[in-house]
Image 1 (cartoon, rainbow, N blue to C red):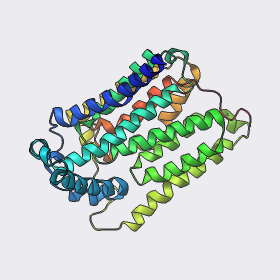
Image 2 (cartoon, helix red, strand yellow; image 1 turned 60 degrees about the vertical axis):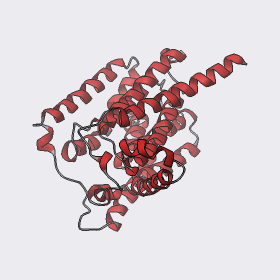
Image 3 (cartoon, helix red, strand yellow; image 1 turned 180 degrees about the vertical axis):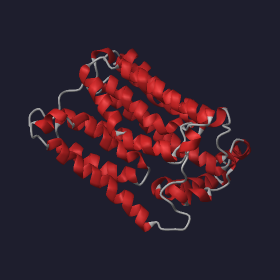
Image 4 (cartoon, helix red, strand yellow; image 1 turned 120 degrees about the horizontal axis):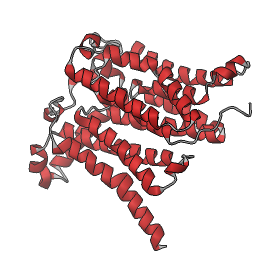
Amino acid sequence: MLKKNDEKINGFLFVIVLPLLLFAMSYYGFESSYTRLKTSEKTPDFLFSSVYAYRVIPNFMSVHMTDLMYSLIDGPLSFFKNFLSKNGTPFYHGLFLMNSVFFVLCSIVLNTIFKLKSVDFLQNTNTRRIIHLLSVFFIVITQYAPTNCDTIALCCYLTGVFLILKYLDTENNIFFGLLIGFTILSTFVRETACLNIAFFAAVFFRIKDLKEGNYKAIWKIIPLVIAFLVPYLGLRIILKQEQTTFVEGFYIDRNFTSPFNLAGLIFAVIVLYFIYKLCSGKENRAVFQRYLFFSAPYLLMITLVGLFWEVRLFLPLILTGMIIVYHKFKNPLESA
C-alpha cells in the first residue's frame, strides 16, 4: 500500500509539479527579447486581425483570462498585487495561467501515450520518465516566444495522437469518432489540427494496400480531411474583415537569409535526424518517414509564412517523432 502511494506521489511530482515549475521559470525566470507580451495591459488587438483572428478559441479564452486576472488582482489576490505588477500585466499572468493548464494536460497526455504499447526499452519506469522529461524540456524551451494558441493546440494535437493510437490498438470506432470531433475543435484553435490527419495517414496508409485494392485507409482519412477543411474554410468565409488575411506575411526570404532563422531550421533538422536514428524497428522507421511525407504541406507553410526561429512550429513533429520511436506498432487493417 505504501509503495502504491509512493508511486502516485512520484507520478504527481514528475508529471505535474516538475513540468509546471519549469514552465514558470520560462515565463518569469528570464525575459525573452522575442516578444513584448509581458507589457501588454489587455488582450492585444493584433490577435483579432490577420491570421490570428481565425484562432477563435484561444482569443476567446485570452479575453476572459485577462478579465479574470484583473478581478483576482483587485480582489482575492490584492495582497499579492505589488509582486504581480512587477512581474507582468494581467494579460501576461492570464496567458501564463491558461498555457500552464494546457501544458500540464500535455504532460499528462504524453505520460499516458508513453504507457501505451511501448517498446520493451520503455517498460522501465525510470527510462520512460527520462523520455517524458526530455519531451517536457522541448515544450518549455520553445516558450521564449509565448502565444495564446500554441500550448492549447499542442494539447489538442497530442490528444488526437492518443486517440489514433487507441484506435489502432482496439479498432473501436468510438475513438475514431472522438478523433473527428477533436479535429473539428482543434481547427478552431490553430491549423496544427491538420497534423492529426498526417499522423493518421502515417499509421494506417500503405502503398501495398493500394496495389492490392484495399482502400479502407483512404475512406478513413476522408472524414478527417472534411473535419479539418469545413471549419478551416468556414472561419475564413465568416470572419471577413479588412485586416483579416489567410496569412500574416510571406517570410521565405528571411528564413534563408537570417542567421536566427537558419539556426532554427538547423535545430529542427538535427533533432528530427537524431529521432529517426533512434527508430530501431523497421515499422517505426516507416511510420516516421510517412509522417514527415504527409506533413509536407505543413512544413511548406512554415517555410512560406512562418519563421524557422520560432521552433515551436516544429514542436508537434518533434514530439510525434519521439512517440513513434517508442511505440510498438502493429500492422493496421490487417484484419480487413
